[in-house]
Image (cartoon, rainbow, N blue to C red; front, top):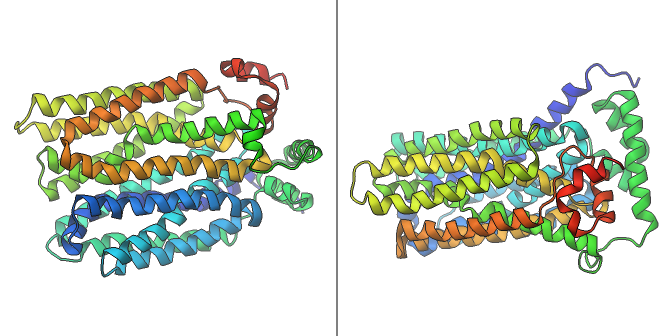
Length: 472
């Protein structure tokens, strides 16, 4: 009865189905890139209201990330993803049918709640269901689906923009496509199991063992259940953790500081200025709208390729050096994006130079920074606070993302391309400083070993987490 044919096969199925949440995350954040120029004409938007439309999703995502974490702790990771699939579907239809700016902003906000909830819940689910030795590769499958969703959005935008660009409602066709993966997410999660770690946290140990036997070999399933129970019992013996503990307990305060910082680092590179407004950037550099839509596909394609490379690198390079290398690469590229429009102003080569630089930027961002960011956020929090801890960290990330999304078109309009990117260069230098000073290495450790490390090590041991914790 407990005999398994291939637990790895079932585990791969779980990853594919659950990461449809990441695909929706990517499509819904990327589709605005091509839809906005057409939407601006239809809904009579200016640079400020363009920022409002794009960033309304992001403020919704910030709120959704907090409540998504709390709800996933209460109702379970699987059930929360099911509810998110429903919200994705109806919010997508609302955006598609929006008759004016107000309705569009309302439904973009609701769509953001789903995106934010998915950004926390899917990651938590993947981290808790993956074996320690391949957790990095499996968790970053979600990042691969996010960038695949963005590439899908860019391709659909280019096809529809070049074949139906004269149609006043072409942007509605771009938006409605996201309804289909929302249906697949909901139907797929109906047959997926719950996270074994969440089941143990609810004292459903027998159910947890049943799940582990489907995705591990028999001896591994029993051993892992014992390890999860031990970690949970250690926490249960102490005072029940609450949000205030993140402020009052030093080791939890340290983790929260790291979580918020990691989330912010990913956003202050300015990546989403390119993912949301890449078409406008290329138009400002000299491309026509239809050509910019086609050129933007290169940004999506390199994101997918770079993420695949990043997943490969995660098994061979530590989280910390990979993140530092990525930040140095993105900051250098941003500096060049700021300099070249000044040097080549008016040149016919400028749009191609800018496109080459945005592609290079995304190679560093998606190949190093983004995979490491989402993986670290899924690793560093203890079991009973994982949902709320990730929620707060991702909330901080989305708030930074919101300000980037809101202010970028305004800065582009008021101070120009070069000055806007020089601001991101300064923020990139701040991100490098944060990672170098505060971020520990976490590669090769179980979630329980990481928790033990943070409980027992002081701040001066940041860069020694791996060597110290392997003795656990």
